[in-house]
Length: 294
Length: 273
Image 1 (cartoon, rainbow over the protein chains, first blue to last red):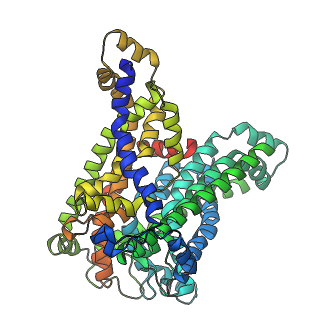
Image 2: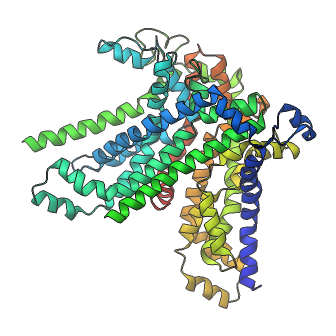
């Protein structure tokens, strides 16, 4: 081994050991654990653990609570992702406009929620969404709308949390869109203008192709984020009303650390992983197809 | 004249959107200064009649928030130092030093980036339980050591270090460690700030892992304590807002002071990754 090679290994060894021990091993462990009946008795003495094959998965498939969590989460993913992309793209286009002044200030303002502590802002929003004293209902009252029981009505709890999540995260997507928009060549816009293209046509034929890859990226990141909602329901609704805001991760947390069914909770974790993975692959495939068409 | 009106409308819109976005944070701050019960009126007031700091006093004197603040600060600082110590040399080595299996290893690490760490939460908890690290700071810090993203961030940046500079130092007889210490580290300084900021904010804002691993109230971080408090004292709006301000202020100030570095890391992770 050369001197450089020896040094290189000593540089990478701590990181590789840490990643192997505290990342790779637990992820593999989750797969193995999901084939056992590891529960609170096994926690005390691991001899109480048995290998049960795919039984945890089979039982999950029959568990209405699990399917409830799945459908709630899918609701977030399928409604939330397009919404958050529209909101953040609109914000990016606004801040990219040549006529808007003091852009750095607005950019920081719109991004600020992203760096704040999730738990703290979830607490704040719980009060903003309060049925009687919440400012959101007060605002609705101003325009004559009846108050909404945001976090107590099964029909409104998911939209209320979604509103909070979009507020919290759209700044991140916006910054990515802004960075890409600023790279789009100005001449293309001028050329389109000379050819008589209106604002919508310029957006459709110049802006969209330029930001296409960024849209794919942002949608993968957003979907992965929506799949992993946890603190939001934990703080704002505790999974209620009538289980309507139980997400997959929340379900896993309760299964694992409230009821100590670690085998079954690991199966949930793995289903979650497969979902995220499948969605990311689908989008990458779509991106490739889009790229080959051009 | 039509164009001018459009320009003004866009500027007004920008102001409106910014105010609307910041509103929850401003409201949080305003309510934290209200007298007890003031926020629970209809219509809800926007600004305190006579601002008071009594809720902050209650938080620190009766609720032990000073302790949680210290826990959060200690954990975030240690997580930052440990993550830098582990990932920076590795990121540099992956960028600039040749060793067998490097490219294969790097490919595996990049592939692993899509695996969310949450998946391994349960086995990691069991592992740490066997090692006696549940309810210790060491247990809370462990995930920050294994940051593939940090490694990737440093590697991307370190690739721009010119090879000739390293070669020249080698010919002068410098050891690899000396090269790292005296040539590489100073050159990496901007990305070190970025990474430190990411880890610090990440650890400060983290919730699920500290919630699981820090079981004793004395070890709670601010978000865990705040969540527990919010489940108990739902009615005490002003107190909860003061707690939220204490939790949110450090990351917000840190971000405002170092936003250039933060945005750089965000775009490196986003646009290229």
